[in-house]
Length: 217
Ligand code: SIN
Ligand code: FE2
Image (spheres, rainbow, N blue to C red):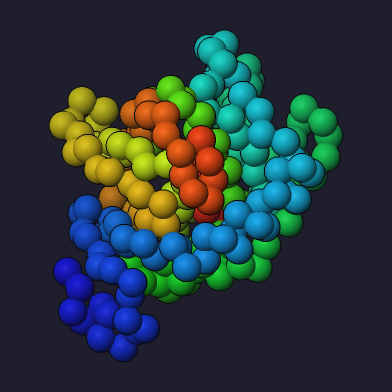
């Protein structure tokens, strides 16, 4: 797929790849905005520090997480849920910068979801060896809204599975600036991230950051 979708849009830096009827990898879609995203992340991360959350079963996640936006996703002994702030320090999440919101909406629109209104942005930080096991994003109230996922920094292998956990998974390399959007019939696809391989990225250094935009309520 490409032609019609891009006919009236700005010429994309690169193409898009269908990962399903409602899922698209937009190669390099965020590459131009990446320096501004990275700059905007500095005060955000100072205000809402990344931390390793605990799963309901008591495991410490290898990915460090924080959020911006009206709501943020958290995990602790009580479960997975959205909260207006970090229960660990009692502070509200920092507001979602306008640039983040615009980028997420533009990517969603490009993938066929013109009405996306993100109110939550989960910020994941992968250091070498950090990984995310196979899961579905299903804590959002309205599953008709897509997930928009922005990759920054070191490349990683994204696991893209089916609607059932045991279905085969594709291995997809995500590079700096890539955006994946999944919604509609692909909204509950299982996905995960293989352990990050060490390396150096010109802008972000020894890490990968992933921003996932969600319409949580
Ligand atoms: C996620 O599933 O929340 C993050 C996916 C990624 O890091 O690419
Ligand atoms: Fe996810």
